[in-house]
Length: 577
Image (cartoon, rainbow, N blue to C red; front, side, top):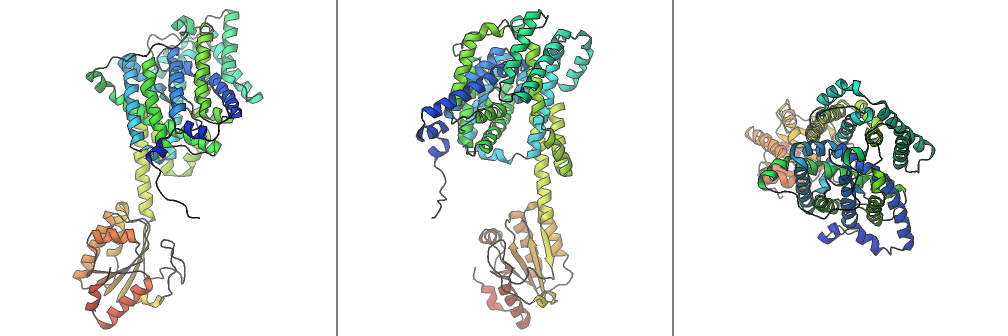
């Protein structure tokens, strides 16, 4: 049966997975499974959403708004069956810096601009390019973010008194160290209790909702014992009992220009985080997501979330993985997760006032510990010096400089190292058998005819095999190798059968070589070039009568032998292409 190679249509690319699932005879059993998984994820997301919001420099209710509005839109319109969206720990650094610099309206405006950019990226079908982010870069920036998240929670973990906590990592650590004498033993106790309960439950009952149980135990303990610790109620006055009416933030052209760099950072991190989360869900479930459709949904969610007071929405790996493990059947679980969060906010808003900030800091400390990919970090450090350089450059820049700068620099170094490795893999071989007799041509899939190996040592015939991707990074090396051919034969045979890719730099190198050979009165025969490679050569002037093309090495040797034996054969200059 023939497999169709037609590209998917526009509608197929952007059809929400919800539509796909409903077409598959979605039934009552599926709804029950999605309700259970949605409730499970909502219980996990409730304390996390508030903790991330507080760590990001905004009030806890805005984290809930983000999960409810953003999570619902992504579930309805997204390209992944299991994606759970909301506020993410990866955004804490960027969100807190934007809120501190531009205020709440600036943060909401930057989020909306980021939503527009994500929407454009999806519609332009650029989501597939996110997969080219190198693995050392993702490990480096994830580990760097984890360090920054933990550093941002030290103040609440220890109950420190700080007039103003610096944003950059080094000044923050300096300020915290100077404030250590103000540590609150009660806050330390609550934080340690929270962490201990989470760790204990995960070891004994890994399927229980450890976060919300730990926060509930810490809140009850602090209230019953009358511990003097800061709570959501004392710091923020509690949380509202419902969603606010939608409204636009203050918008002006000057404000748009000011927050645009932050919006770009939100877009870059949001696209990476969301699509990585979708890939994790695919690996766990055996399904496939639609990357561009997912970006469109993320864009719409980030446009809608600020209208209700929420901030950056992105796919969350931990909550998405929880959704899959809880038995979700489709996007309905994500929709119900948002609905359950809204119910919790309406019904339990008064109780949220008793939650100690140290408990939420303990939750984020555990999240930060889990985010550090310790085994992968150590493996990459040992794997190769190139991977270690990319990993450390990304990690250190994220921690000490800027998240976006770390990703871009890490990606640039990884790209340069890849080009270097590809260039080193290109080889030029001369005066020895090109392939063993009858060995299959691994590039074109043909079997070569046997040839006389002695012809390669004939001083009037030089046979050179070029193997590997012949691109700009290897062009200088290949050109130098060809120029180092000691003798000056009457015919050069360049075997291109092992060249899968040729770019304009490589073609220009061959063009220069053939021109120099022609001035010396030598002919050049190119054998085994694939159609795409031959097309590039012809476009750059590598064509008869200066060059002959032959399909196999045997034909090229026959052509060279004829020329050597009979002098310059003018009939060969009318070589058919």
